[in-house]
Length: 385
Image (tube, rainbow, N blue to C red; front, side, top):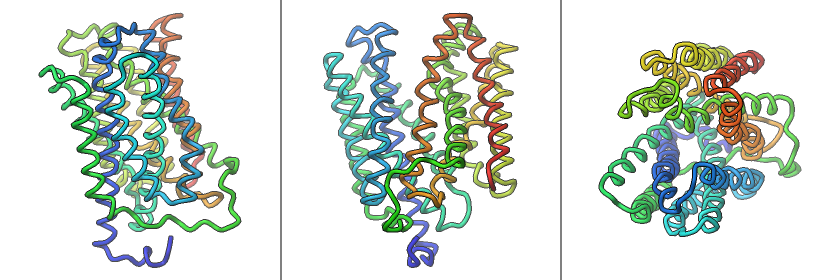
């Protein structure tokens, strides 16, 4: 970090923090806006559930394809420029999704949406790591909390517009325009410089053991998180047998505690340490899923999903923060390397749940995911403070 930034006055650091938090908010709005309209797009194109599952793979495929590009761009041009580019493409990608009138068009738009999302993800998290260094204490989880809040806002707006019969294209134009306006208002206040990179440091290096450990940690936790995103409603409908009006309760409980946990995770980490926080996080994930599997009633499953939300809340922010502070490679490249491993869990988790459920039952699938929580606890005990 340049000395001028290390000695920045508190108001300037606070201004950087606000701009980065706004960037997380804008990114979360883009993601949740698309997610809220998936059922509408499915109906418009006449897709079966199996066909929709195949189509939706275009987003993670685009994201994974963009990972090495994102790390290289951040290392070459800085996270500030790439964050602006990523959010710009993310916002412009929403109307493309609304304009898609065939499966091939939707696949192409979703792949580009995945590329834009990961450019924004890597660069904005690199910004967050830089701001955290200015503060000298853990603040990364609070940024991810803002992303979770954006998920609530995007889902809520989508629910209202769907009820009003607003077509996806108008919805996407509205949110895309809002994101562009937010980008214009915040771009000047983003952190101007990343940590300096020695001239002889290669842009592509194999992750060392510590980064691989972080990547596997992210993989296990993101597999739990992806399961909650895609299967919580199905679990409440099929296993808990919740009334139709309460099918979404499990997901809402998970999201609420994940957001809450991210706003207190920084304080908890500073007080008790990174290792204890990760171990506790994994145990909460495992306990919550076990509770929902063993006693699948409306009350116990809701409490279980709350515990899972609290458990996953701190893991990814802590892993990203540790990767961004790596000394063996530039922050953007380190984040890309860890995210490559971690995001595979988010990608493979939901299809794996469906496959295991087809062979046995959804409860068995969720029991296996509980093992991922135990893995987080075991691996977290090996992370350096």
